[in-house]
Length: 401
Ligand SMILES: *Cc1c(COP(=O)(O)O)cnc(C)c1O
Image (tube, rainbow, N blue to C red; front, side):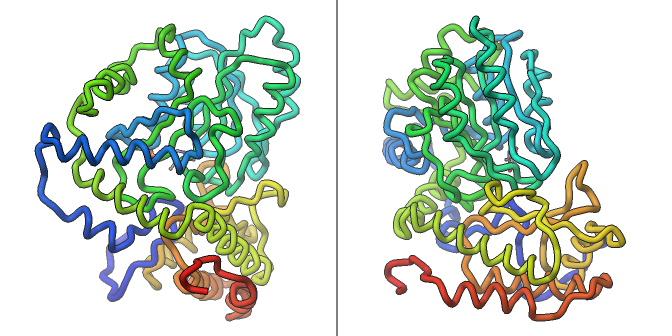
């Protein structure tokens, strides 16, 4: 696709990387620093304390590793498991597929539980596997909380219930890359052993930091986990935590300051308000999709994602054309359909530091593109549905009511 200059802002509505608030870019616009000076450990200490809040954990141990979500996956697996260990993993879209591929390449024995793309993880199959596994050969359950490719959110509380019901000791490893800081996420309450996310999703930071949180049980598992790990070894971090210097190797100084500001903004709004805001923007998006006469890729309401909506287009339209035209004509960035749903869906990301009018701008753009590609949309129909809903519900930003 040829690059074309366009005036004004790019409207970034891919489900990650997302918009970075100006407060964060300003906080990051600074020189490098000596990370062995007292300033960086002092800053790091506040970050490690405060990130626990976004995981909703008090007993977890956080690690902020210079990496992406993919590295955070690897860190979760190699620190807690040994080659040949049996894992149950759910294939429901491109991100769960990629994680499963990583699990297989790291030589774990993966029971892949597959569902149609657009459906959630099949937890009935999980229940029967757990019920049958009296010998506890299953060492871990790996699940993507929010499948970003299809806009499906899985029910993690049910996974915990199943494990508890059969008193099964499997580790519970969760990809929260497109959920933590945007969807209801409760590491301690749901008994999650490793939860992880990446900086460029709901935290609205640049890419480059993997945020991982390990339960006491996960830390215990590292003592016997035989997977080869070097860069991602939690023990190196723990050693430096004890010394109070925190970093086994160089962190991104700018990202640490960015994270400080990102967390400050989230706490100022209130984490629960942030989550409620995601719920409202998602609902408004779904109402617009309905008003356009299009279908959500997510097949049941219980799985609707509040961070990304995958919209199914009619068979006579190629969804990649919608994404191309949105970018070229309107400077609007939408998410492509990935793999099995390529050409069939386009995605609207509505996560991170975002407000109502930004979303309405995106929805206006989508309407115009739909018309441009020959879909019989009534211009304004989606906007009307979304704005009617938004103006009738309370925004939940305390200082602004
Ligand atoms: C974006 C994403 C990833 C991959 O993260 P990278 O930072 O690109 O490595 C993994 N899982 C989910 C659910 C995601 O949305």
